Length: 109
Image (tube, rainbow, N blue to C red):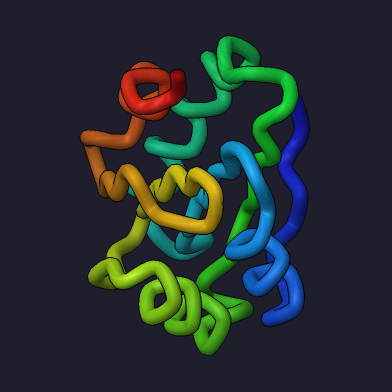
């Protein structure tokens, strides 16, 4: 599985109207904890459903977009952060050490 770069407001709008599951990983390229969470997540991400789109958001480069994601999905901004979206609604919001493929799979039917 590969990341889809999340770099536009139009993509966020598309995620909100997309049926099925999507995952957004908000990552700080300046944070060692974020790097560790990303690395650990990527080790197991092939276990996720093949039809789940995985979005990668560099929140240093796209801070305004990160704020939009927090606002649109009604979550508190954190970094690192994993959001699982189903049919346009955030059904899981995890940060830091709670980020894992197992957590994401726990809400995917």
